[in-house]
Length: 134
Image 1 (cartoon, rainbow, N blue to C red):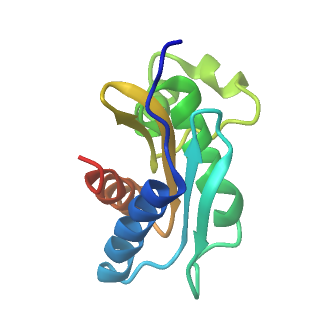
Image 2: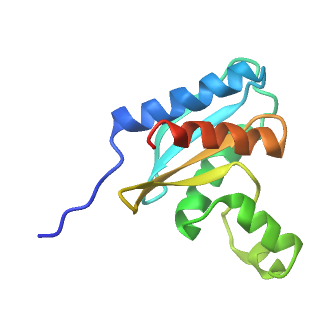
Image 3: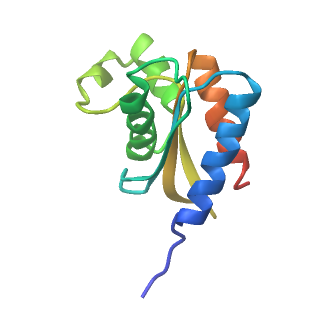
């Protein structure tokens, strides 16, 4: 039988912790979610004083969207603003910066989604989480 890498709880926690550390260093509390390759939440952190109530829904939605499209949600946001507004019809997905797919050995294993205060911080914090597995 073929084998493939999977995102374990320990690795998901390491990714989330690196993202949380970056959020703390930026003084931008919010929500960080890490999902598996099916888009199911493995770890979700809601930091004290999270900026928006919607972050609890947005962060896992961004992570799930990054998995389903196999690309950063910043790419999807740019497509909506430009040549591909039809992406807006993709129900249940979040086309906003802050979602990144997680690849291990070129295999999609999950995604991270961040919702703090600004799109650029969301993206920066998600990328900090990814750096924990590179």
